[in-house]
Amino acid sequence: MPRFAANLSMLYTEHAFLDRFKAAAADGFKAVEFLFPYEYPPAALADCLLRHGLSQALFNAPPGDWAAGERGLACLPGRQAEFRAGLDRALDYAAALNCSRIHVMAGIQPEDASPNALQTNYLDNLAWAAERARAQAVDICIEPINRRDMPGYFLCGQAQALKVIETIAAPNLRLQFDAYHCQISEGDVTNKLRQAITRGVLGHVQLAGVPDRHEPDQGELRVDGLLGLLDELGYSGFVGCEYRPRAGTREGLGWLKPWFGAGQFKG
Ligand SMILES: O=C(O)C(=O)[C@@H](O)CO
Ligand SMILES: [Mg+2]
Image (cartoon, rainbow, N blue to C red; front, side, top):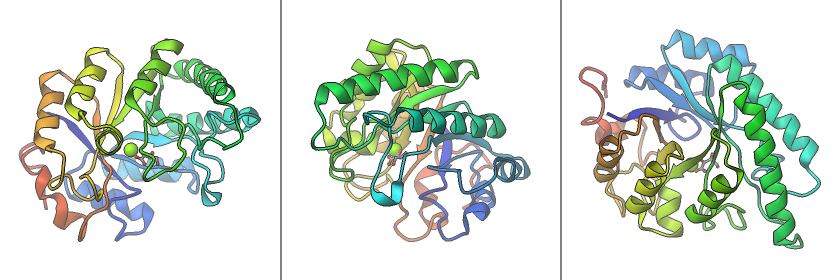
């Protein structure tokens, strides 16, 4: 049975951020994930988790200047010191939240940068981050993101991510497989998910409907098939529900009902 995490950056936005933990727990979630915790002290977030019986599945390392359009620093030449300081900050939060997965975003490739420089920088930074995180038993996850939503994003394909993971060969550098991005960028989602599991590199899964990033009960993906495959292949990690509800988070949770354990689903 997959373990589901409510993505609190997209779900429960009817509530203030710190109230989303309670709302997720009330609907039967046992775990949460979100993009960035850095506006809040680690102790306040740890307290929310504890009070509502939740575990933290994943969050993101600092992405640079998000408001200015930055989407991660890992591939960017000249930003190594900032990347490293950000990763250390994320590791402090991971310790406080008892979280063993951090998503490190690659960054938007600058138009004037050489592809070789970006790749070298990306590999150097990820190798450093994986080694640093390993001491704390934390996995570093990398996620291919589609370029319709994030034009110019450096890591945009499953094969590209697998090659990076294979090249660095750190046991705690893992793939974050977001079926929504995979379907938009390249399709063949089932085979790509199977490949990630059989290669032993799958660190985290996220789901949304395609093409509109709403609940995964409509559109191009057959979510029951993907969740069944995770079960069949013995995936024991989390599945992040990372979508924008069509009309209210609780109202849209019907698709999860068959997958939540008996008595968990309150919606
Ligand atoms: O957008 C996604 O998909 C994510 O998983 C985020 O962490 C990055 O924006
Ligand atoms: Mg995602």
